[in-house]
Amino acid sequence: MYFVANWKMYGNLSSLNTLNKVIKFSKSKAINKGRLIYCPPNTLISPLSKKFSNCQIAIGAQNCHENESYGPFTGFVNCKMLKNIGAQFVIVGHSENRKKGENDKLINLKIKSALKAKLKVIFCIGETLVEKRKKKTKSILSNQIKIGLKKVKNKSKIFIAYEPVWAIGTGIIPSSNDLIKTVQFIKSKFKKKFPKILYGGSVNPKNIKNLKEIDNIDGFLIGGASQNANKFIDIVKKTYS
Ligand code: PGA
Image (tube, rainbow, N blue to C red; front, side, top):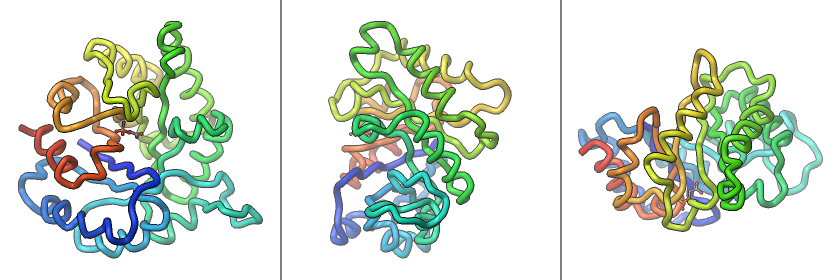
């Protein structure tokens, strides 16, 4: 199982000390088959890659520019640059960025540019509450997948993170029944090789007991709870207990 920590716009150099516990945990038996990926803000990728140099914890960025090469794009960072400082993954299509205007076509360009730079992609999809109420979940997810992955061949490097927008940071998670059906639906969109599927949205040490029972989930994308090392470790431990 994969456990992806999405730190969002939190953390500074001193926050890295809190990860000593996580490093220790990652080297212990208790980690079981858990694979950890930390996605800090860009400012912390380089120091984090030094900190993790003696352990198996991977690092990802939270977004990227769609241009493969360098260029006059003030304030942005491309995948080459992220790879160069130690990222192995990049989150693309997070709803917090979709809300700011990122559309499926742009997300598709970002995914292709990430794969070219040899980054693995955590591709976020999910419906809003209004869309859910209008029973549009399936059509929304279909479109996000269809356009987002248009002409993307190597799906083995893609992780799809199903994050219902209404579940992010709210403490609310989908019912097990709904989640089982949605994950099944996402899988049905792929013929042979499925990308890995993560669930994200208010994952915490309490609800992980239910979430881990959902079939076909390969891991979790964890926001709020990942900022606390103890909670993050607890989530991994409870997945295997
Ligand atoms: P949350 O965030 O765990 O705080 O709900 C998840 C995410 O935004 O990836």
